[in-house]
Image (cartoon, rainbow, N blue to C red; front, side):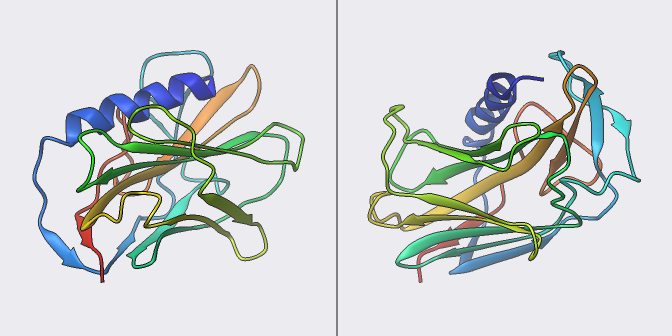
Length: 196
């Protein structure tokens, strides 16, 4: 499945989920995602993945932590971040109190390579250069950091995030950070995290 298709899944789910109010939490969110809940689907398909892949470790999210202060920091912890021969993609949709539509970030690692590309788009599809995404293979984490001022100093944020990896011409593997063994068109949003 192409990164563009994954992005369209994330954006369509993002827009649908924004209309649902969520309870607020103060300053941070910590959520556990069950391990062994990776799903796979055909590499080039618009059908969401449905085959359970409990033995797959790469890209299996086990925990997400969100904090909002002077920076928005979203850290995903994984069972494995092996650099093996797979295209890897880590995605974030960021709903804020200051915008009608979400921000979108993606960190891509091409198959068979270790170089990374980070893309961040605001709700108007501008590409500000104010955020970073760091992949720490030894620490098994991927961390998104965006200064709050870049996001318009929001009173709150809601985060939807997930991971995808694909083996060219074979299968694509997905994990939604907030769904146990489920992937839909768009990652599931967490509750509002208020600025501290």
